Amino acid sequence: MLQFRRITWPLIWPVTVLVFTIQLILQLKIFDQVYLFTQGSRVDVNMVMVFYILRQAFQLNKGGLGAASAVVLFLVIVVLSVLQFQVLRARGQR
Image (cartoon, rainbow, N blue to C red; front, side, top):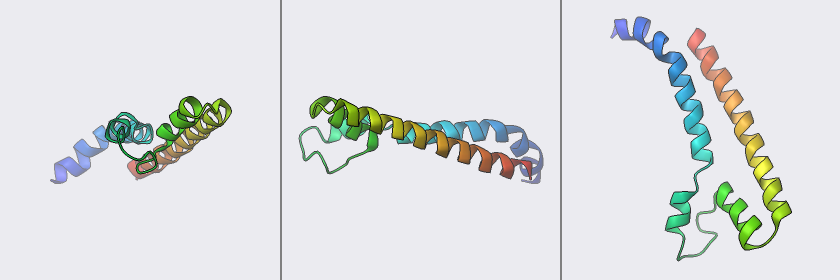
């Protein structure tokens, strides 16, 4: 266990940070599971940001609101990714 904590883990930490960041982005962009499960039920039951963007832009014909929501989602992803990357990178350098 000591070998893993002192040798192996610091060597794989950069890859772990990258995987955590990519997973954060993918979880914020989840769409297909929600779309498939809510196809026949109420729309507002499982509303996620990407589904909201699709609904505003294409189903309700509010392209401006959909585009603005997409920009907000992009900014949220960028901010959270940078924060997570900085926190995990600082933790890895300790």
